[in-house]
Image 1 (cartoon, rainbow, N blue to C red):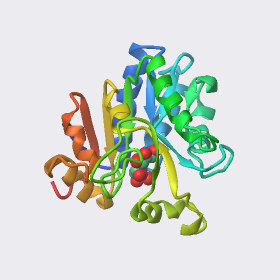
Image 2 (image 1 turned 30 degrees about the vertical axis):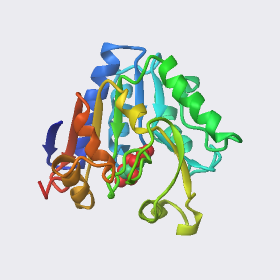
Image 3 (image 1 turned 135 degrees about the vertical axis):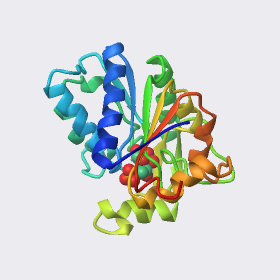
Image 4 (image 1 turned 90 degrees about the vertical axis):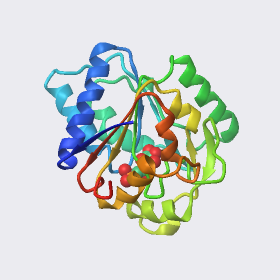
Length: 241
Ligand code: F6R
């Protein structure tokens, strides 16, 4: 894994956006793998700036998102579909019909997960995937466990993740208890992966990802097996390295 330690969140976000812009500029109909959460917001802001400055064109770009709460409706302002529209899709010239987020209200979530996975393959796979990292080492909503699931699936959120994400909801009890997430192999199929981490709260997870045991109890540690992963983090997230 390549590691870039930058001064602060702003520099991290700009560096990540530059990598994404390069991919888009070298392949106009590329497939972006996108994430939600606080960490990539700055990167999306930089990409919106680049779009407005005429430096990047999303007209033929397609995207797939890592995960979505379950159950949740797309118009709920805590849904990941809402997040993506708000932070990126509504601000650039991407065709929303080409943006895919797991269905948070599927009546048959198992079939919906299978269809999601097939769609990733039908799109030709993900050219570049951005990931945040959970304090507990999760990627997407692949939570630490004795075993992990390969492909897109429904999963129970851990108490730690529910507590971490409760900051976005009125109360902890409002946080959905499940999510649909791409699996480890869905993520690994991406040709290039950029992991972002910012702030001291992520320092322990970053240390475990880079220097700890390779274990499903820290799903991010498995990224060391992928041939093209770059961690871009700020000084605070790197404080324990
Ligand atoms: C979001 C996702 C999660 C987050 C992680 C970090 O789509 O898949 O794995 O990347 O929980 O979240 P933040 O960035 O809010 O610290």
